Amino acid sequence: MSTEKKKKFIVDVTYLALILALGYLLLQYALPLLLPFVLAFLIAYVLRRPIRFLSRVLHVPKGLVAVLLVVLTYGTIGLLLALAGIRITATITSLVQQIPSLYSAYILPELTNFFGWLEELLAKLDPSLMSALQELQSQLLNMLWQLVSSLSVVVVGGVSMATSFATSLPGFLIRLLLMVISTFFIAIDYQKIVRFCLGCLRGNTRNVVLQIKAYVVGTLFVCIRSYALIMSITFVELSVGLTIIGVNRAILVALLIAIFDILPVLGTGGIM
Image (cartoon, rainbow, N blue to C red; front, side, top):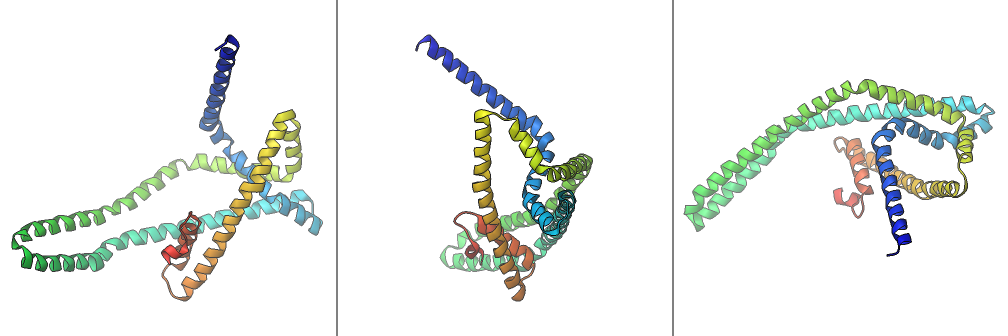
């Protein structure tokens, strides 16, 4: 290898190492600080077309429309998250509390009947195996009961998680406040901000950024929107159908099936 090639190799390796180090520092330290502003920019990007449309149709300044839409968006998201959190928490708590009674009412009788049938079969074939079978039955039932009883730890773990979340709530509220305020300002002056950011870029850097934007908007966002539409249609259909036939917790079951339907290969038929 010539001296020039060695120099080029060292420079390339050093450049790659610096890029990886900067990426790690960005993800580790800068991203948590910039995340509220990034989310605010994404929400403002989604709202930019409705803001222009309503401003043109209603003949209202864009600033006022932007403020109203941002308030409506955050209010809707907060309400849906609160209702979903309350519903999911209540459902999980109810299911965990019902597991011991379900075990005693359904699983234990079936296991007892199965071991009784197995004892009768072994009594005819080889009576010497009866003691081993009874010991196996006792150990299995004890293990299952301990497993069912230990599920109460899930509720305790949920309480501890809620407590830890409560301790980090002030920082979360500060980030949320920053995100909401940033969304207002970005949504009002979205076009000016985008033109300013693109004006700071030159040459190939500008072209690369525009290509990434075209790919993300033209491919990734379209896929996300398509999957969200399919999941929404599946959720509505299943919610109506399961409610009509009287399935318990029809809305929650429909939501889980709709999420399951997005997974590759799998579909609603696997659960239905």
